[in-house]
Amino acid sequence: MASIFSSLKNAYTLFKSVDFQKLEALSKKVDLKKMVESVSDLDETQLQGLMKMMGPRKDKELPPIEGDFYHLGDEALKNEDRALQLKVRAFLEKEVKPIVNQYWLKAEFPFELIPKIAELNICGLTYEGYGCPNKSNLMEGILAMEMARIDTSMSTFFGVQSGLAMGSIYLLGSEAQKQQWLPDMQKMKTIGAFGLTEPEVGSGAAGGLTTTAKRQGSKWILNGQKKWIGNATFSDVTIIWARDLEDNQVKGFLVRKGSPGFSVEKMQDKMALRIVQNGLITLNNCEVDEEDRLQNANSFKDTAKVLKMTRAGVAWQAVGCARGAYESALNYTRTRKQFGKPIASYQLIQNHLVEMLSNLTAMQTLCFRLSQLQDQNLLTDEHASLAKVFCSMRTRDVVSRAREVMGGNGILLEYDVARFVADAEAIYSYEGTKEINTLIVGRAITGFSAFV
Image 1 (cartoon, rainbow, N blue to C red):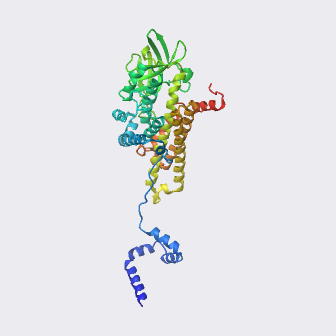
Image 2 (tube, rainbow, N blue to C red; image 1 turned 60 degrees about the vertical axis):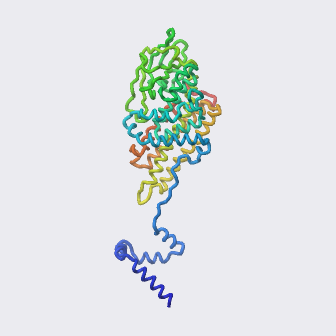
Image 3 (tube, rainbow, N blue to C red; image 1 turned 90 degrees about the horizontal axis):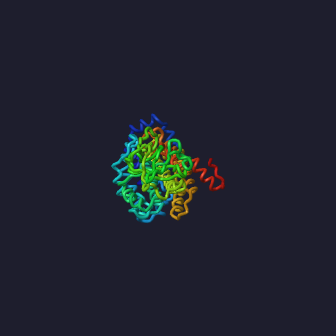
């Protein structure tokens, strides 16, 4: 009798809890009798699954968005270097990311950031002496990646200053030139540029520079043009590479801002690296003192020493560009909903994300090994060229997939990926095209040079 009473009580409680208006509305959409029959046929496990699904929904705790899937940075960096990486990352997130799209759209440079970057004390990171931090090449590569992860233009500006310009003086300058230029460049009080590429000479710079240098007493007279020269519109000193008319060898010159016969025109209408201020330099009987000739730059082989060093940095920039695109796309797909749930929950989207991560992780592991070789003084031209070829190609694939999973929003600057897509095209071409770097590797593995 007690059990019957309890069952009636439970039934009455259930009856009172029923919202008959909702039940009536539901009956117009589904066959309630058929639905009850279907539910009654479920076994206990199926019923538990159904009740769990019908229970209150809780926000799922998602894994952190992390482009370093194999935790290479955690394993490779010492505590102080890891702290520096995170310090630079925080600076980029706070100071650069909020304004970068604005400057990219206007094709202007945020000069107010230069003193703030200088405070990080990361310029000339791997050099010894002259106020430089003397860190590892691996640390330098990781910081290049961190910069490009937010904006490739800013990493390019920094690479020109710290790598190409300072590197030319550090590797090829006299001790007096190093003492004169490097401390202020390290503090970014003096900004440098690197003038090698010409309007009609890109890949053929090794043997075909048309910019000439002629010795006249204690001076050199430079004539010609340089194109695509980053930082050139505001640099205090520009490294100009010219062919000596006397011995036909390439030599380097420190051309100071305001030198007579030296003029710069800003290049317009770029679709990529729009923050970088690229210049077309014209040298019209530009006079340079002998003391401003790089004293240890006597052939293109010397120029190539600088390019080998910085080409590794470009590979790291490619990693950063790909990582920024991947992390932006991952974040977008986890928050963008279609058909009632995040698009990251669909198989096709996950396939794109995993393909992106696979490429990114392969690029990272390659660059880590590349920097290790550099720190062991085992880096060769072909090592740097292979990394540049592979990473710049894979970056194009990563940013393309990032653009794809974001649909139409992928072409809007506010979602960042459109900028990464455009900038990946510049990375693909500068510091040696895919074809030229391929032939450098091909020569190393076959023993035959395919250069014309």
